[in-house]
Length: 273
Image 1 (cartoon, one colour):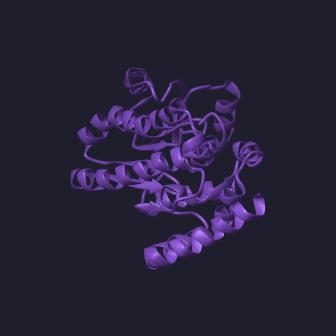
Image 2 (tube, helix red, strand yellow):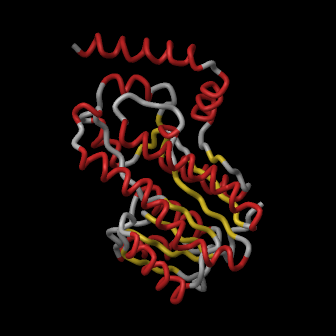
Image 3 (cartoon, one colour):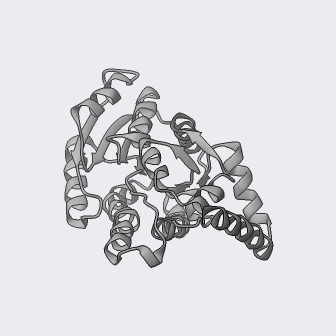
């Protein structure tokens, strides 16, 4: 079990959405929270402060572009000096977006990879020396069920999240013997403000495949994240329906799984023309 109370938790992307809610839930459990966000706001920090168990808990916020390596390393160094070294890192920062590769500009693909994959690498690089110096701590990388099970039209996003899942698994082997645990948080579709905008242009084939795992409220997803951290889970998958889909995918032969999903895509494409 990981005891949250008294720990210092760094959360990227904590200015809104799941990152902000994670900050509030962990503050309510007694953690000190350091937020790292591209657009930090006083309102978000106030929400986290208001959720604290005790007024003695520290809450600090820093502006950072996760894709900018030098900025990440410099900002984390400042945060460590001012707010204390992290016991737990949660890298929630990332971007989504859907488009088929044939219709996607290189710049779009490149931006997704730089933020979701290289941004993940940058923040790990920045916090790792302090974790290794103490010989303990936890890193939680945020992947996605879309980084385990492919979805039509999520070529850039899926590629980036498949890479994040692989990075987490490789890092786990490297860091566990040195006292640092690594977990990967892989939710399915979560009901966030960004999802509502995405649905306006979502391809019917994408929507058909995503229905397999269903959609869950953001509160349920973040509760699953916090529970997974507390229970030292290496793969944190919130929600029974997403867990079921994950295990079905793992246990189903590729040929059968592809036949089923190919049929779903073909049906959606016929109905959309």
